[in-house]
Image 1 (cartoon, helix red, strand yellow):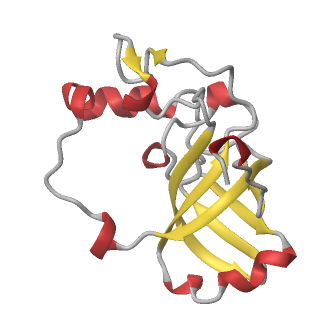
Image 2 (cartoon, one colour):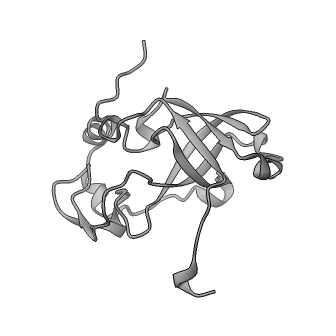
Length: 165
């Protein structure tokens, strides 16, 4: 298979309360209290076996409403231009998104999730379990992001999201 022939097809759809990209939290860490659900297509539901034992999962998805690809962007946390691969901006050469969300429950082919920073109707490409043994690395160096204090990150990351009462 050549690189030009790589193709993905959705395995499901992510549903959330977020309808507008400019009001959606930028990362799942800023979307506490935002709930949603993932509906996995029936033909893939057998692959959910054992997932209910995990507290968190990675969702890989297609940024279906992303703008055209750019190799340099000004990320939400910073005021200086960065290369797209040093950011999590959606307008990538391959518009693939990645979020870690809390898995609240599994009912048939539906996953109920929290900490959702994904637009409603987003095509799901894959699900992987978050595993502390493999995925928790400490300490880390975070490039330009280490220049940003937590308060500033929280303000910019929540965008227009309103806390539920």
